[in-house]
Length: 497
Image (cartoon, rainbow, N blue to C red; front, side, top):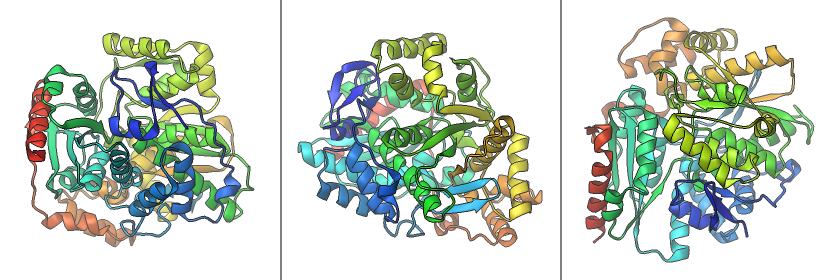
């Protein structure tokens, strides 16, 4: 059976379902699979449905779930909540293929994992016969919040609290969260950035004030620090590759590149797990916006937060502390928990760390990084629409621009799959301004105009936001975070009683 170990203490060992329940280890480390013993050749998933591929891959990685349990989780997640039976379609453009990850209920790639995580978590709770209510604490830079809220609303035995930066998410993302229904949900804005929100969520797992407030309540997370959120993202790497083989774009076994717009490093790390499982991945191209801490790290080996934080039109990537990079350092260092602990302490105390060249050489065998400024992002949206009448959001544009830079610099013509992570309608104002230079401030008027220009239908869930009442308006200071979380834990416990 697979063992999951803390990146900061190898002796902290749990099974997959225990890692899903806990989310973060007590020492602040991230549970990481100790060794991938399974091998899934891409030929094994040809002509399978998304659900069949998901069962095969997740059963290999989360192997303490029975076949019946995994089948129930997968079929409960990937159903008519998605607007296409493919779940993740692939669209060819001149520069490669767009892996469309935004056909779920909240129109972002986070839906792929956050529709199944509640099923995995509740199955895990049943395994341990836990009576405590699981309190999901989640930080979001825009998309995770709504996807997590939608996944966990009214799920028995759980409650969810989402923290998001008051300034920095799009108005559509904010309204998606603020209008969420469900008796077990809460949404709180923070006067800070995503890194502040993420820091609060991590701190809460060991903060004395919060721990003292836990009466029949235990804390977990829906961020990609939770393996139950991370592992489902492996699936679409396999399904997109299978589509290329089935369409004769590549021969089975031929390598491909994946270009991933990422801020917290979870989505691209799932691609690395896919490679370790047996998918023929050539390069994982890490695409960043102006907050290019990951690009600098991959190029120099120095991870430094001593830089300006810049709000961009691709806000889900406006992140300076990329949590899942810790898992990559753990694996690339040969699971050296002392090394990882030292790096994370340096980051906490000094705001930076430097990785030895031998470890960076292992990382660079697969990963490379490119970043895109705001003007190039806007031009990429405009140019693709003008030339191919394909509409993309700013995060996808960052990835497409990175792909072009990579090809120009390296001459590598390996077929490339570009992860398209959100519907353009989540960022309607900015996308419309890119393709038609119109400054329409009302999001819903802008949606109608963008639909007229593009012929791409507004997703019903986004159109419906116009008439939905706002439920959540609370905003807090960063310094009040632990007090607010402690009060929320008491509230959840009282409801449970």
